[in-house]
Length: 182
Image 1 (cartoon, rainbow, N blue to C red):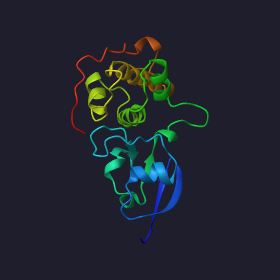
Image 2 (cartoon, rainbow, N blue to C red; image 1 turned 90 degrees about the vertical axis):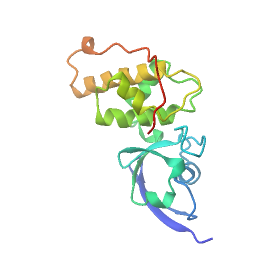
Image 3 (cartoon, helix red, strand yellow; image 1 turned 180 degrees about the vertical axis):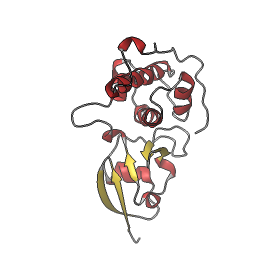
Image 4 (cartoon, rainbow, N blue to C red; image 1 turned 90 degrees about the horizontal axis):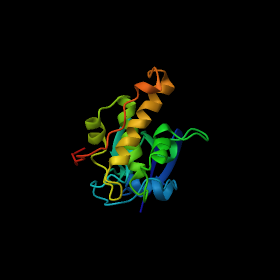
């Protein structure tokens, strides 16, 4: 089989990889680049475990042929932390018990990051919609929604758009979580 070359920016670093033309982006990330934080779940785009951010938008990497990502800017969960500092979402997930088995966590984090990159003060409904393509069988979403709300406050405070900690909204219980479409 003839290998094709693909070049992309992954977590801030340009990489060149020679791959079979039928390689999916998920497999390139996990097998060729050893970025195993991106999880292989359903391989049909239904569970969200393989969610990454590509060119600023959440993308299900199990559905994208790797060659289509040529020239793309990709962020995986491994690229969220800066040096030794966790991203505020990662901190909030840990502090609020939003991680149980951890399988859905990378996809949830990246879906939440994409939301907060666009909207630093989302409503509960906007949070639910942003993570609606990510399945979690452990937490029931309540702690995940709370963690995203806490992270929103941390990000706004860090950026100076939150005048005081008292202005932060109390996290909701996330009741009524429903799956929507991406």
